[in-house]
Amino acid sequence: MTFYIRPYRPADAPALARLFFRSVREAALGDYSQTQVEAWAADIPDAARYDARANDGRLVLVAVSESGEPIAYGDLEADGHIDHLYCRPDFVGRGVASALYDRLEAAACERGLTRLHVEASELARRLFERKGFSMLERRDFELRGVAIHNYAMFKILS
Picture 1 (cartoon, rainbow, N blue to C red):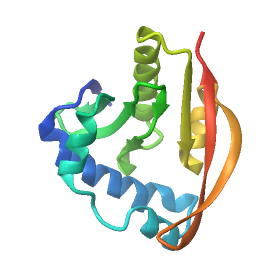
Picture 2: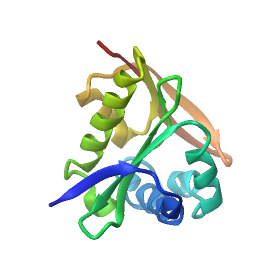
Picture 3: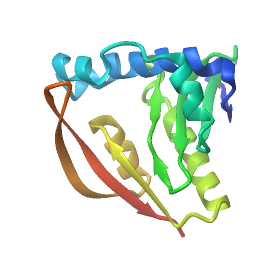
Picture 4: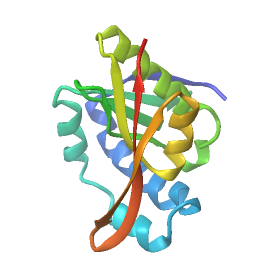
């Protein structure tokens, strides 16, 4: 499988919104209930919101297939927070999210950041652990009235 990673383009916004929705609704079902994933991704997000986020100072990278179709994306905020790292369900487990994370970490190092942090889902937690992150705590909270959890994690960069 061939893919490449490039910076976000405004035309990506609708595809990234759909990718997020599919990722949560399909890939997260192995670790969360149907009710939880529906609370997490109630609808496909507004593409304009994705474009606004991509232009608020964060770095957004997009992994695309040979045909140029987005298959994963991730972002890095100025303080080292990785807010999104989502992969299309049919590409989960194929190294795409791992490669995307590696590029985000390299960008963090280039920017002089010394620490990364994330609130990771169950599936993402396993990836971040493989990448050297440590867990601070499990975070239990409610989303749209539904109990759900994630993990506060961090990594010190050398």
